[in-house]
Amino acid sequence: MLNTELTPELTREGFSRDLVRFVNDQRKEMNCAYNDRIRLGIVTQSPELRLALEDNEAYIRGETLAEAILTGPIDGVPAIPFQVSDHEADLYIARCRAVADGAHGG
Picture 1 (cartoon, rainbow, N blue to C red):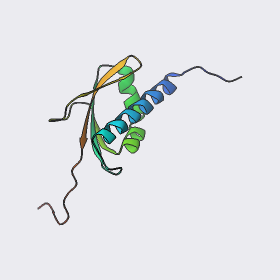
Picture 2 (picture 1 turned 60 degrees about the vertical axis):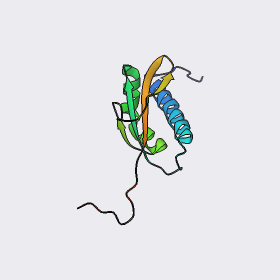
Picture 3 (picture 1 turned 90 degrees about the vertical axis):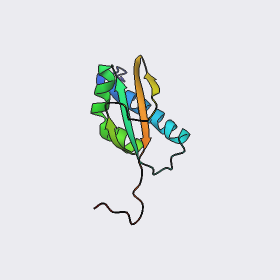
């Protein structure tokens, strides 16, 4: 018999997949190239959503090309409301700037 019970781990994995899908939709709206890196800021009061982010950070970073996932807003970037199930968050997505060829620090 197939077990159809949703464990907390499966629920958090589902939250992460929904987040990845949402972020990638936003990347398209921002006209990001497929290989553009981003910084992702997430503000939420949901302990379940925070745990999903912690448990699946590598997956989220890999699927969204996020160089960093911050637990706060990104200065100068507008909040984008996000909801999965009854868990709400504000997302901040910033495209990372590439260093120009030949430009070196120092």
